[in-house]
Image (cartoon, rainbow over all chains, first blue to last red; front, side, top):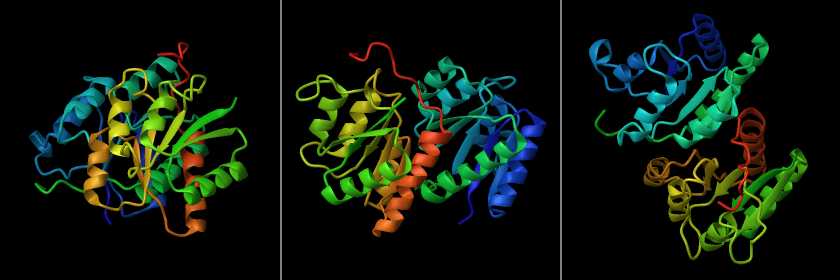
Length: 145
Length: 147
């Protein structure tokens, strides 16, 4: 089954690594990338250039983003009756306990910190694919699609 | 540091498989087992038979439970300011799409289906351990456990 993953990430290096790691793990994954919080919400609400965008099955969200912060994006997703069922995993360089607690309070489905080493980053993306996109039962696409 | 895992499960067979799998793969896990939803809430609130229960780092919750349903337990956990940050994973035999959607609506952290074969079950517990107890950052214990 074709999974659509939305990656919200402003670092071009991390975007590239994530793309390559998903391609290696499962070439069928349809990875969509947006680079700031405003564009993430535009994508999710299918506005502007994203009017025909597929609803993501899974979201990887950085916390520190231009224009609109990842915490605010997370809060918007989890307050929206239509979007809140989409598993949203925080993927950030922050290891701060306050960010971890705030993210879980805002109902992030899971919190992951980005490893610095290249091989560890690849291994993390592979484990996201193995767990979230293989083992976990994701909610089906809404009927309105 | 021990990792406290609460398993809410009424099937003795599944309890045994989960216990054995964790024992084999992660000696730091302290598995606490309650067999219905009422006991689960008592454990989480340190009430009744559980005045000294530790706050779980992770909860594994079956949906179909005696006395109080897993859906109700999930809703109570996720409505409670102190408990809602505890990652709560649904682990159930149900493959019903309505159960999957309702669980995510009630803010389950993830939904896993119990495999029928014991070796696949063992493998799933390994995946839970590898992902949630190794990769994921869990919120740390809060000072006032009495909350």
